[in-house]
Image (cartoon, rainbow, N blue to C red; front, side, top):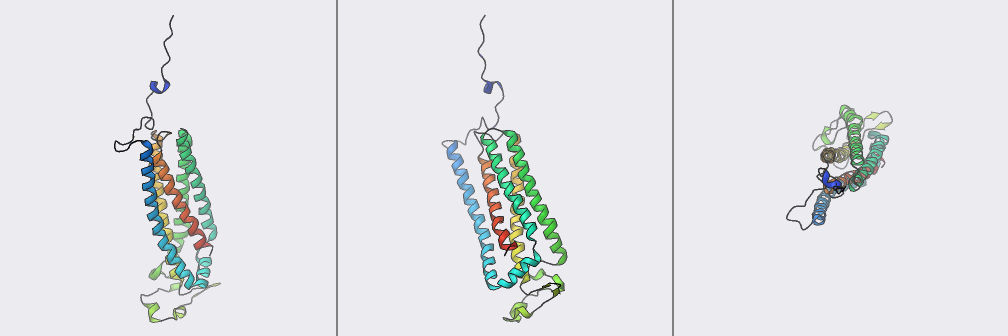
Length: 254
């Protein structure tokens, strides 16, 4: 009695998309494609760094001009505990997205999906805290940027600073218990709003691309043979987290 040879297990089932992945015809091999994709992502991230560098430069200039007001405004308008909570959440999300990429590299689909889901939850938590605990109360109290600043019933009019020359400190001082509203508060809040809102938009974009990566992962598109786009999503998310690591101490802990 003869025994038929066992079939190859990989051929006895339908191959996952990552197992049958073939790089584009214009690439010599998958390695070249991966390196080009990562280079493109790094170039894009360089433009993101330049964008936020402008905000950091503006922060530096105004912080140098009005150091005392900057310190007082940070303590009064911002809650460092909220910022710290969001920092911890983003650090956790950076760790989980690394685990997701490791899951793709080791062909552990469950590990990949679970960690992508945790990363998505962390991003959602960050935005909920930012919108619900910070932005909404500030909007209600008039702690808004620039000429929209109405905290204490005062509105900063266009040209008001120029009209008072170098004595803008004397424009208004509204007593709020232990805090006296300063003429430069609206500048601090302008830096705060534009920096954190732009960062928050990047977090929202990150949620979208992480959700897209989860969908691809669920369909078997990521595995040891192909996980380039997932790695690029991870690079983007790390830059978003790093930018917040700078924003948190500069705005909340000055």
